[in-house]
Image 1 (spheres, rainbow, N blue to C red):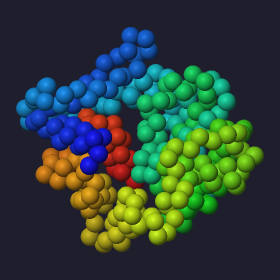
Image 2: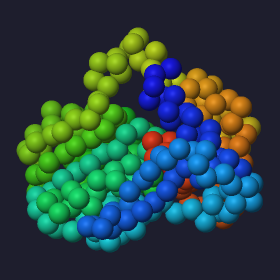
Image 3: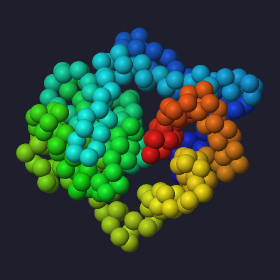
Image 4: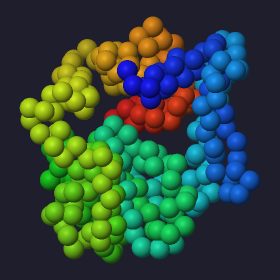
Amino acid sequence: MTKTKFKVATIFRASIFGVAILLTVSCSKNNDVPQESTTNPTSSISTDSLGKILVENYVDPWHKAVDNAGFVQKSASIGTANISYVEGPKNGPALVMLHAQMEDWFDYSRVLAQLSKSFHIFVIDYHGHGKTTAPVTSMNANAIGNDLATFMQTIIGEAAFVTGNSSGGLLTTWLAANKPGLVRAVVLEDPPLFSSEYPRIKTTVAFQSFANSHTYVNTTDSANDFLMYWLNNSPGFVANYIGTEKLPYLISAINTYRTSHPGEAVELPIPASLSLLFRGISQY
């Protein structure tokens, strides 16, 4: 395990009920942007009750930063899809942002306020993610790419800068290659351009997630809860980033949050890399 993985796993294991409040939030004197801290997780010991209260009342502080920057959540009917997106104030040229696989627009929440000072931002939940709804037949790069292009033509109405992370980077590449008139420039964030090719993809975390997805939708007795299914069927991820022995505590925290926030995406007071992932999977 790398030092980074060890740090994340250690912090996570110390953050669920009855151990410590790992996420401390302060405001910058200059811009009121939340500053996340991963202070020594053993420095603040709490009881089970306090941990439960923390989860029940948790709101990711970056929602406020995004709202204060003027972002608004909207939707648009594009072909057979109803695309959910978040739009910022018109402070510059259009910038389209495409999140990673199994995440959603909030994946970019930590940078939106600053970027919106110079760009007119559109963060899009593409097919299968967030609040976007689309038929199963459109779950492929060509269909998604064409719908994104139509969105850019009809909703944005001008060529845009486009950036994408992971699978979002693949879609960004698709747009640049197939719809160059709509793309001013691209920034690719870790797109799996070669690791997504068969058979190499079989060694990736993404392949395991896709395999889990396939099995889930074909399991007639599934509980209609993909997040729980994914956690219980991703032993490698759980062992490396959570700790197998702590999985029951995580599941308890998720259930507690859902009871207090019915119908909402799951958010927990744990490191952002994990909280954003679980938020995305809860809507996947």
